[in-house]
Length: 304
Image 1 (cartoon, rainbow, N blue to C red):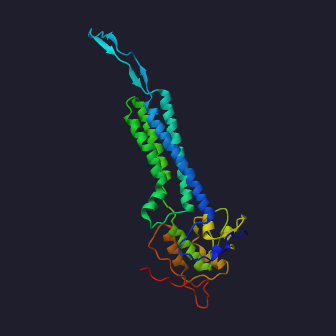
Image 2 (image 1 turned 90 degrees about the horizontal axis):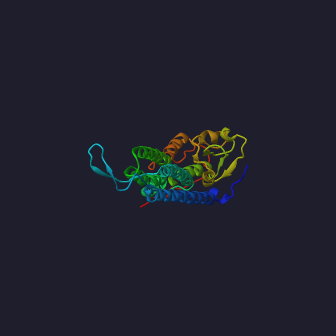
Image 3 (image 1 turned 135 degrees about the vertical axis):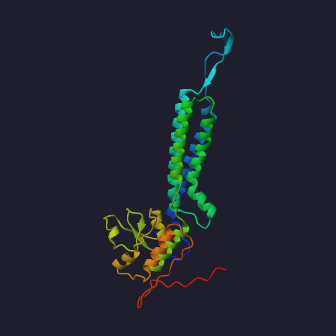
């Protein structure tokens, strides 16, 4: 079993969860790459608007006099501007590339937010940080789509095709950019607090597969043959684990550790918090008669 590189962090009783150094570094890298991809997508949108959509070819004669055989009168035949086929195909390719860049950036940005989330109590920042992928996707597509439909040189077929492709790709990119269940500092803090109160220290176990971490190593869910890793909750998040398992009661029992009498109540509160609730109280573990609590933590003074 691989031990944590930061053993001192396991006994931390900090009220607020903070990412590990590794998690913070990964999150920063993902955000830089995502920002670069989004910048290229918006730059390509600008090129499409200010150069590609302005392309035109002239067909017909410019100012040539012709006799209308039906009326016998002279008419002027002027050249007509059309949107060239090469520009139309290039526009479709540009729309696909913009979508690919926006979607890839959104996926990386959401991964970064899992590693280094915002506080849900900071409402505006929490919303913007978690939905930035969808916002950028709209910015990267909406002006271009509007100008496609306003373009006077495109024929009806070109406008319809390019417009539909743009709308579909924009909707897809925006949908993927939305984080429907964003992580938060409050959620990770609740998991960390529960672990410390249940075990007496911030130490959990995980393996390569799965999305949760566990309270001990002798449980069936991690008997997969993969290497078991022990570390803090922050290190578990940096390894890609999203939350504490809600089956901690059966795990504690299997490992011969004391199980609080209100384990189901704690699990229910954690479920609500993990689902985004912010006003849910995390119950204090209630230990049976003769059970020595893993850790004694005094009540904090009320905030005035």
